[in-house]
Image (cartoon, rainbow, N blue to C red; front, side, top):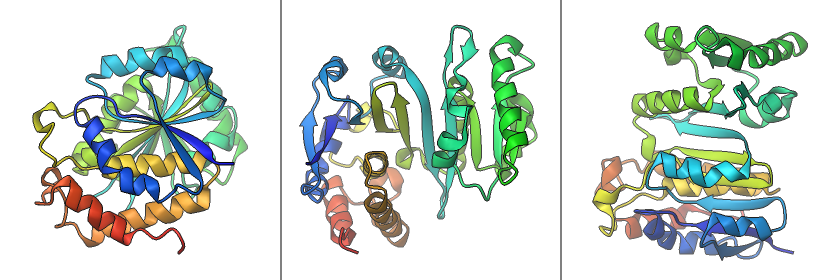
Length: 289
C-alpha cells in the first residue's frame, strides 16, 4: 500500500514551485500517492498520522492562524551552512502561559533532531519570563543529569546573542518566539534563508515546509528555487517510515548543490531559471543507489 502525502502549495511562489517539482515527485510514484489540499480544514477527515508538504503563507500571522487548531507539539528547523552542515533549531510552543515540555520528557524527539556528538543549548528567557520557563528548565535539567552521553547547556537569549555564543553553537532549543529570532539570525549568518526548511509535528500528523516566504516580487518569473521544498519532502519521507530513502535523496540533493553552486537560480547567485535548475537536480537523483 502506498503512503499518502498531501500537497498544499500555499501563496505567492508556492504554486509554481510545486509545479516545478512534478518530475521530482514522480520519482517516488512506486511508494507515494499525492493528493492536493484546498484547505487545512480538510485534514480533519484524513487518516492519522497525515503527512503534508506545505508551501509558504502570505504572512507569519496567517500561518499561525492556520496551524492553531492543529495543536502543535514542536517544530524543527534545519538551516544549511554555506559549506556542508546545518544549524538545527527545535522550537517548543507556549500554551496556557507555560511551555509544552512534552518534547523534552524523553530523548525520542532530541534523538530525532540532534547529533549526540555536539552540544545542545537551551536558549531561554527565564529571567524575563520565569513563570513560563520554570517547568521547561526543570525538564531540561532532568535530561542533563539523566543522560551522560549528551551535552545539554543553557544560555539566556540576550547574552547568547550579545556575546556571540551563537557562532560556535549549531544545535539549539527554544520557545517558538525565541526560535523565530534564532532562525532569522542563523539564516542571515549562513546566507541560506531560501534553502532552510521546517518539520512541524502536530497532534495528528506532520507538516514540512520551506522557511522562506511567498516572495511576491518574483511570482510568475520562473526563477524561484525549490531546494527547500525538496529537503522538506525528504523530511516527510523520513517520518513516514522511509528513512534510508530520504537520507539517500537528501544527500544527493545537497551534493548536487555544493558541487554546482554557480548553477543555481538568481536568488542564490546563479542565472538558471527554475525549470533548468530542476532538470539539473533530477539528472543527479538516483533512487537505486
